Length: 99
Image (cartoon, rainbow, N blue to C red; front, side):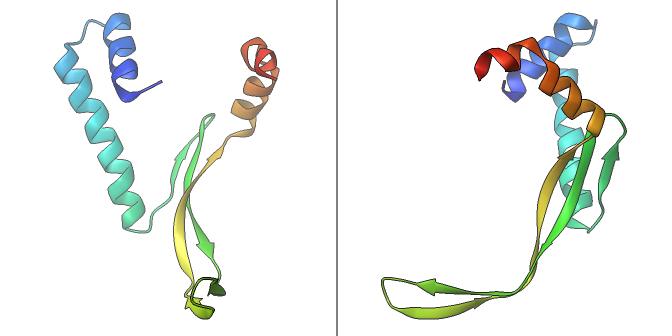
């Protein structure tokens, strides 16, 4: 499913204009990105959390040049689904058909 599919589904289930829905979703996603860039986690009860995960400092190797390089500790964005959401996905008939 793409962002355009989500916009179309919201438009079909509400009486909102397509451009309005598209703008709302764009602002929503930009808000999530900007808050995570500012170092804040975002929590949606019953859905999940967008959190910053710390990656430790490590030594990596460039095999072609046979050199070692240091990758400093850094943070990456991560989505952690809520337990109730994970349980619903696991019990879904559509997901069971995929396996």
